[in-house]
Length: 146
Image (cartoon, rainbow, N blue to C red; front, side):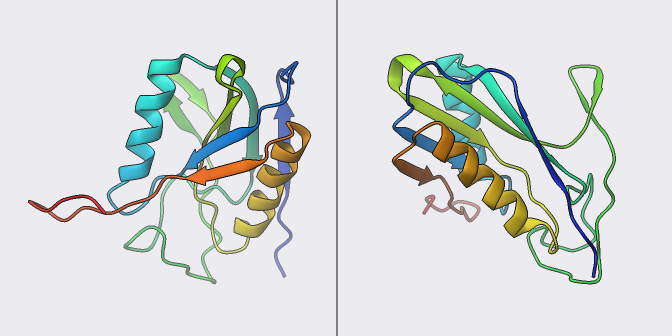
């Protein structure tokens, strides 16, 4: 069986507990992802941690991208962010004034999804998060968002 590894890079531990967290990952139409990106840009939080996994592919072999394909390990690689090379990652931000943690997720492939989720939960426990809200939704062309 393929062994996955996850690396959590703690950049700056919040000085005070963050009681709430909001998380989202790209997916079908990425409605929650867009809402979280807007929230992150408005609050200007501090990048607190990054979570890396060899199971973060830079592209997906299935359509839709969230469809599990057990035989596909993904293609771990690089992304370009603001003109710089970067590894795919989950970004964890802190907004201490609101006691809020923001998590910009990234889809792991079939083999790494639980390991990445466990790393996120472990980090949230360290930050003393009590409530986790996950933004997700879908929209159909010309229809309201659910």
